[in-house]
Image (cartoon, rainbow, N blue to C red; front, side, top):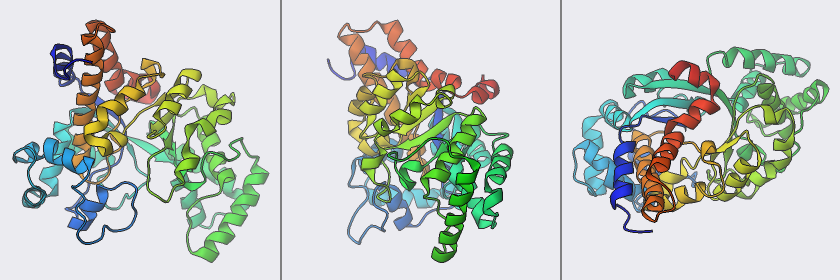
Amino acid sequence: MGAPWEGPARDLLAELGTIALIDHHVHGAFRASPSEAAYGNALNEADTDPLPPGVDPFDSQVGFAIRRWCAPVLGLEPHATPDAYRARRAELGEAEVNRRFLTAAGVSDWLVDTGHRADDLLTPAQLATASGGRAHEVVRLEALAEQLVSADTPPQRYAAAFRSLLAERVRGAVAVKSVIAYRAGFDVDLTRPSDAVVARHAAAWARDAARAGSVRLTDPRLIAFGIHEAIELGLPLQLHVGLGDRDMDLRRSDPLLLTDFLRQPAVRRVPVLLLHCYPFERQAGYLAQAFRNVYLDVGLSVNFVGARSASLVARSLELAPFDKVLYSSDACGPADLHLLGARLWRRAIARVVGGFVAEGDWSAPDASRVVRMVARDNALRAYPRLSRSSG
């Protein structure tokens, strides 16, 4: 590959600046200014403990990328010091920080997972207002189940109650999401359980929840039930894959473990969207080639590998058909990450695909068409309700 910013890459980056992205998986931005500790923890995806004294979260790929690409949006020089960056954020306040970063991201549509940290994050409507774009809900299936057990739903009524609640909640949503990778891993039975099996497992869950004082759903049979109920409604299914915090056993989130699930005829009738994927982006690419309903992104991962994001984006374009790759940021909390995901991804795909053009492997028109597909067109096809509302 030639120099990274010779003609084709430079031209593609300029073109991408005119394309409004569809961020097909994201969370809200902070409603109020976070503490220094909360902000720092948001820059470390895997460690769930508060960072110890003396550890600077900016000493990381994501931290360096924020200082380079986000600092100018706050009126600072690129590579501003961490102290200067923190002070400027605090001076502006979170509402202004959100407005600047969310509008600068150049996103027309946000697909927002509302099942995580709803109390301290902007709602989809608030995210849309702050960004000037549109926001669409993605319903998290485990959160619905936990709502039912918290309401002391009788086990014999659990299946019917879940169907009713799901039908109500997805009425205005564009997709559903499962975090089974966190709760049980993919190496479990993902066939559809009967209502009788569901009732038995719901009873056991209720007993365990009462004893432990927690309603966190970890039963793979109940999670599988929720997934199949959503599939029955024909909704696109998002699945967390790979990179996440240490509550998850990363080894059990390899998407190849989903192969039998993806072979099920009912599953093959709906889009299945593999989120994040790092370090399994090549496995996800294989599945996207093997199954016409499987899509992938490398969102979240792009932010956290920072200056190495071009190599990650390149791997996502190896085996996967180009109409199966989507853009996402999976930003959560600091709006810095909503902007950074868009900025790094645009630069990464322009550099990678521009390199193909520079070396004569691709034509410039094909490169332009592919980056537009990944930026927004593939999402419009994968999410039928989004296509109807966004055009």
